[in-house]
Image (cartoon, rainbow, N blue to C red; front, side, top):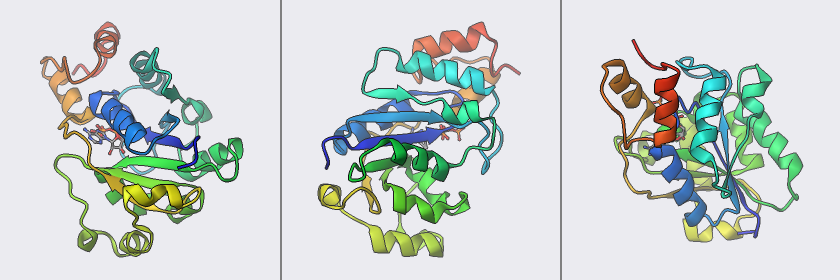
Length: 217
Ligand code: ATP
């Protein structure tokens, strides 16, 4: 891989948790990324609207990523106040990079399965590679993919070890990460019941949640 391959990880981060952080860290190592940009969605178009405000989600991500130079928080989608679409974000990042610098969109397998519902999703491959991480509860089985996605997957699938020879984008690879059955949904449910999600997310994020009374019923 080009020495400066950049990783991109979007999500609602409602709230950010150790599943996200571990995904970013393991992707960085497996794909030899120089950095992973963490990009909270402002108004995600293809899913239910977040429970907490964009400002709170950004503040929690900032706390989780403090003093971690291998990750960079990118607030463009939050600041845009428009629905957050991945393709314009990748176009923006492409414009910042050398033409031959690989961009790698990092997704958990659940997000990858939903790719065909994303705006202009097929254009992603002209801009970036896609790296799909395992996630408990979901399997990446080509036979079960939506037909259009299966076509792209079969055409573009590439072993992790072969990714460095694939240029700046266009390949789909997958990697196994430490299984962590952590989700923001489950964390919100614990908080709504008055139970503790401690050790599923950074303490600083949990302190912020309590201080701002987020996710309480
Ligand atoms: P929610 O439960 O609200 O849907 P989430 O926990 O799935 O949220 P998102 O912000 O939707 O978190 O996810 C952002 C990205 O992180 C997605 O690509 C998702 O697949 C991935 N991801 C989140 N949690 C994990 C996990 N525990 N293991 C692997 N990937 C994860």
